[in-house]
Image (cartoon, rainbow, N blue to C red; front, side, top):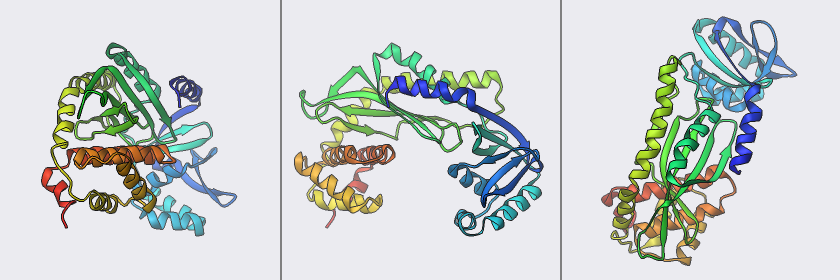
Length: 327
């Protein structure tokens, strides 16, 4: 998704968003054509997004597996359960909606940090760093932005294998993830992306929503971007150090990594093929095989997760990494 398309979509969504802070006594689950809906203040019925169902189960302490079984097999039982625990909770909740549907069921202390505000704040800071938006992603629960800066360029093994510095920005308007800024490196030769979670800044979406606190969130976002760009040289050094940690049996290491992170057989084979195309018998080489294989993933989420696993390997303590290579 291009930046222009992301901004256009967020602008389109803006007038459709609505929020309500409600006491549990004002919320009721009812069935409409055998599907659970929320009725607010004994008025209109609202469809509930799937991710929001998970939050309802969590806030009312209903086991998730049992919740979804009721939803599929006995929705009338689900409605009775939800309404019973809503009545007993006597709590205030924060509900976020989009158009005619409910997209989030949250604590009344939830701090609203909307995507468009985050994006515009980040763009203001990124302009000072010759940064460009590489790609964007928007779903019902999160916004992700990949950024790279041509002013941050270095190499790991040799000068013809350039690394470009950047960051990965995440935000959720529905409480599923925190506002998060992580360093992301882009390997020019093969377009690999590597997300390093060890250096991360986040803002939890909790607070009283006063203007001063909101301003501090965005100041923190801009400061985090500056700090990550300043730390580019240190990250490159970590990558260079990873080339000194040699691998005797890359197939075994990759197999162990696949087992540990519960990757599929197809994903494991893609990593093995990526390593075979550019065999580098060290920690950095294994991480690069993972990030190259990430490009074959069909979904944005799975591709990003593979980039994260590559970053976790880079920052994995030496002894733990060597254990992956033991007979």
